[in-house]
Image (cartoon, rainbow over all chains, first blue to last red; front, side, top):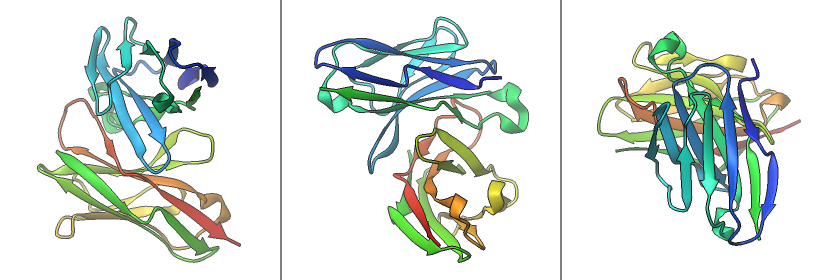
Length: 117
Length: 115
């Protein structure tokens, strides 16, 4: 299993440009999450999904959109990037009830570093 | 609503010394609590979790944590620090029971180990 993978690993954008970050998991997990990590701020939840076709807002959703058309993929979109969105973005997934003792362990991807100029 | 506070954004210990990373939580319902570790340029990895079974929880790499309801704490300890323990550690909380498994993370504590 590859686990949770994220594409791309690093990206530079100009203000106003758009892009999509892709998260893929091959563990058949029900739940998926997008976080951003900023120095001294810990991880903050942007959006999450409790199943294919469903999404919900987290703590800091403004400026981002998400989609989960397939169970294994969770896309994070920036429609018009701003310098304040410079951050490291992490995707995570959780098995849910079918995962037994691991049902709530979050499995993280390696992150995407985004720089918005 | 729930939150966690990690005391000390940076902790330094000597190799072989006790590691103590502090986490206090606030939750309106019984919480589940977690410690995650992040090595440089990597994602987070679960160290251990408390989900209302034993209050003393043992995790990977020799770490353990004790849930103390009276003190609303879940401090992480390791008897003897190793150089490989240098990383950033995050405490996280969520309400007990089923749900979206959504976690609220603390701001993190960076652990340095001095040879």
